[in-house]
Length: 165
Image (cartoon, rainbow, N blue to C red):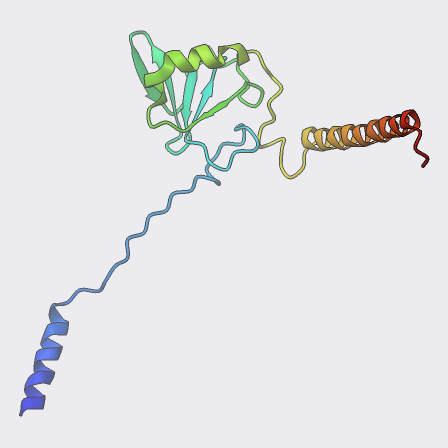
């Protein structure tokens, strides 16, 4: 009888329990980044575009820009920015929660990049793009020249000291 009581108690307890649900929320926006975003960043919360004076929210896909007396948020840019090519314009990665609160410092720091078209976008920079290959080639060449120069200077120094090779 005791076993029957414990069995009934056990199955009764199971009837009132709920399955355990694990709540893990990991947010990586690696695949969410726009193709016009800059190469080399695994994570970006906002892009600040100094040429437009606009912030782009990567996670929510909203543009934040100053409209008259307040900051506006929209999915698309206003018509006045229709001539801008987002693949060419310079983007600054900013990982603040609300970067427009520090807009004056962002503007002062990055406004000089407003006509800089040297930044490579993700669309153009998949894998090893020409920019990075040229840069690696340049650094290898500089390293060879550096080694060559030091060998030459060592040789001159030894000659000066009277040492023989």
